Image 1 (cartoon, helix red, strand yellow):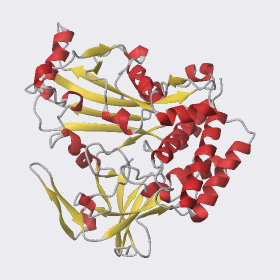
Image 2 (tube, rainbow, N blue to C red; image 1 turned 45 degrees about the horizontal axis):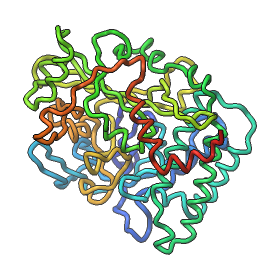
Image 3 (cartoon, helix red, strand yellow; image 1 turned 180 degrees about the vertical axis):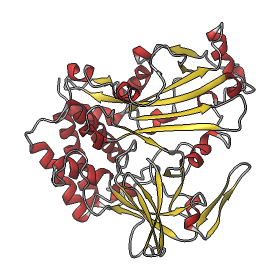
Length: 443
């Protein structure tokens, strides 16, 4: 997606070709409206009919209007005030707030923001939004048309995310919010039943399209899963990306050595040392996220669908320039044959700054935004975890107790075997949210 600047009625607007946008408004008072609420109307995601039950389900899960502050990455949002100043990060935020329309058709969880907050959940737990969401789920359960296997896989993934998020926030009854507590239980039941209805058979899961290969046929993407110099690695089995989504998706990490090492095992294990020069040793790194799917028997299966690809390419052996490449899933593109339903996100794409290093939610309110969501460019967001020059390797940024030396050995995985999924599935099956959901899938 490319960002373009426009001017509407003399007000600076940051408009994105994918339908995202920002419009200046007066700062909202807490009394008159929330900083996140439903968008105006459903988008045409799964079909051209806005009244399609799946389009309405998607709308209640994802489409929002967000009040946010913009960073100095966007000069048109001036004037600015200081937001934060650290050793390498100097961020300023707009003194005005902006309204952003988010379709939500990207690699994010629904009901956002949900990181240490139920603000995104409350949007659909009360009033007309609750009634509309409930009706959309009921209509989805009642419909007879058959959807494609890939559409069902992505819809199930979104429903599953919503189920786990609702499951996580169980405090309404204790707080005396009895109506919200009842609505939560009703929605959990509908979500579980619809997940079962759209479930794929094991054969359907095995024959899901390889969207990464489809995209690679038209775009210069690397052959991560083949033998093109890329190596899939794992040090510690625990990964923040996996835990942040309650183990519904699998994170895979790939490295591309600048020169093919004679001893790959030694090469990889040397990265456990803090002084390792990543840029001098690597051409690039890639993070791939793929969903788990629940089949018709209630068993977990890894899918070969790629929903999120994040790459950093080190263009020479210095740190002068690291190129970022990001691709995210677009459900709307399912209707375009051969698209690979992945959309490239530019370095200057407007995105939300996380409220903490382990915040992978969307539009989280944080200090940077003065208590609202804070919009920065993609490259700025990446510095939160990977440092000013974007050369940090989070896979190896682990604190190991001195008595454990360098920690466990780094493993080279077989990318064709999808080995990273094994640990994630085991962790998911231990959780109470899975045990409750599993009851909707009788053997």
